[in-house]
Length: 613
Image (cartoon, rainbow, N blue to C red):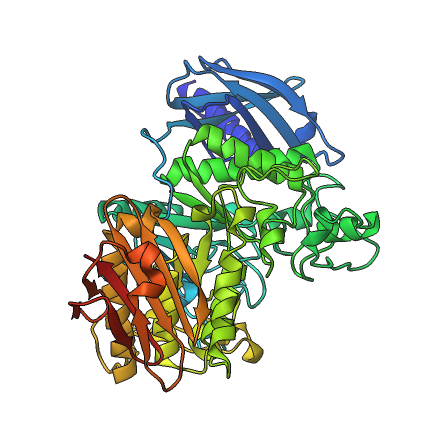
């Protein structure tokens, strides 16, 4: 009799397990958190004919509010409310279909305590590409189930960099003087080929196993925090990868923007702010696909909107993240993106978001800036924007023009338009990034141009970002292909002969650039006058651009001389309104004391950063 009871019990358990395996394949988000400002939680439940089922729970503080069914019976959207009284634990969800029932245990975790660290103009962000920075764990170079395998011989292939490689270099980055790390996307990109860049997401809740696990990313953030550094996660709401698991069975017909044939976006975000834009052009901007392998998500679908918003909230709470860089920020539906930015701020006050807004015009960039009062009434709630106009101005200023004053005037002119930004100190400024010809190549592989550009970026207003390898003037030409902009960081692989961290086999130029970068970044760390001080600049003349950063306690004079062969004399009387009361100074770059500021020389193609005394 006992054997019969055991057999029946075993059969029932086996039947329940089979039923569960067949009906519920996935629930997103995979867990949630107590203590959220907004208790609303939307679960996407996926499984064969799950749309026919009902759901209930008796967990204290958790309530099933509504169920949403789409035109695909394999999805069920469960809207819950998690009250402020709910405690961390396991929420048992009971799924019912007539006489059939099954349960799913859903984790409810405690969110991190304390305010968001965020980023501000005291920070310097180091941008790196996980696949190309360092290979700390060769065992994950090839992973079963991942369609693309290691191919280091191809510039567009996977090279094996990973999260452990980044963790292994935290001491180097700290010593370099950076205070934050921005990772290009590390979420699963299980595409057939050329997905090392990470911008073809195939799972919003899973780290690509070739980089490591979710827990490894969480540990990376924790280790960075211990060293006083912060972490920025790259996200994409505009599109997914064509091999995303949704694409085999879309949650609804309107989950993505679909056309009779492939239709590409026109890449004209200016249509959103253009008072004369044709509706067809606006439609194509928002709904057209970014690329053939990048299906465009329909953020106007409320279910899509909530799903995307929750992915960011989940990663912030799960990993104790400090910032998000949002790719192709103007491409999704603008009002949805504003609601997202606002929701993140409500849940995590002070959290940092920077939106990629790629324009060469401050008027177009500033449309998306925080607290900007646009004539059409649009308000983005976006804390920061990528300042491409300043980036392009540095190229024009230091790429060796025949008329050096004209080049420097580009810097002056672009900063003179800061009245367009309510808070220009929030702008992220940079010399280059993963999508551009590297600055050193752009400016003619001139070490002098590098020093001039870095001196400017590290002393002007804004939040500086430096691209990995820039500190040793790595080269890369966009016209040769993106893979050449994203080469392996020297020393990140065991077979490299050159190693930046160990200082092995670096050229004289590379050593000089590295020392220069380390010096100026670590000096900047301690300089409140550079972080938040006011700024005054003077119209460039004779190939000289001069500006001051100052507050009530300190003043710093920055001089950029782009003349190729001639020294210039700097006379105090020309800048007397900024130099009155100061008699001497120290050049931060050389350590040289200037005992008399009345008149002094600056060498050709040289920057001076002078702490006035």
